[in-house]
Image (cartoon, rainbow, N blue to C red; front, side, top):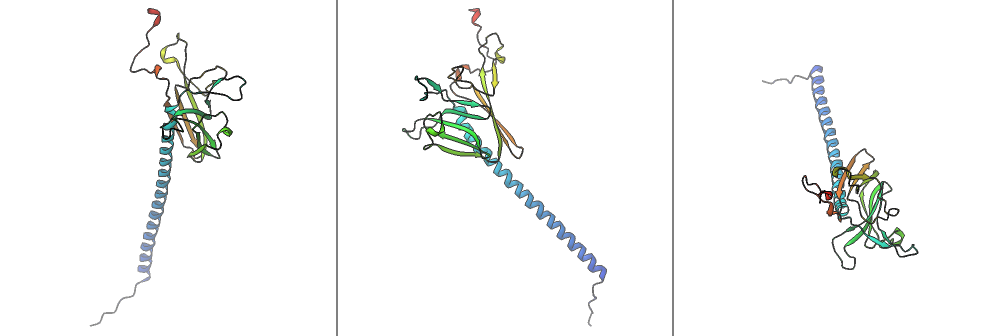
Amino acid sequence: MKFRRRPFTLLEVLIASTIFLGLAIVLFVYAGQTTQSWSKLQVRRNQLNELLALDRAIDTVLPNIIPFTWPDPEEETITETPVIVALPDMLRCAFLHRLNDTDEGAIRFAEFSIEDDNLVLNYADRPFFDWEDVRDIQHTSILATDVESISFLYADFDDDDTLDWSERLVWTDEWETEESERTDAPLAIIMTVNWKDGRSETWIRRTMGNSYRERFGKWEPQDETTN
């Protein structure tokens, strides 16, 4: 006994086509969302890697900044000039570095700045007042790309003993050394990096060479007038 195969009706074809088209659209949308999620994940991963590299560079320099003076060759008399330029949008300083070569020493001289939308760290192993003095031995590291701006704040200690102890820590956007003949370094530094895509990250690090103002808990300095 033979059975004849019934042909598909137009309605069945339309229903099957609709179901197939719906599945295709769902798969297409899912694939697009997966691709977008993967792309966003890649962007986030690259941003995280950039932040980690930047964080390591900041931890290498800022916590190890030390006061350092050097004779300025342009001065008529031998004057010990502080090797630090601390401005709102640029920082040049001396910092302690791990001793890799006895010929290089354990002090580096570095500068954070923006060049061609990149946050760069230029550094050398000997002191300088102009980059032309060390142009042949300087090194450059790109710390972040597509950077809009950087800014710095520097912690100072007010010597006015009439102020409350908590009020004597002040923040300034410029560390003046030449006019005031100061040779010390900031107590701490706040560094903010702003990217062109709207991201912003801030680091605060305490510097070296100022531990005599360190305090723990609720300790208050002794009132010398009572002695």
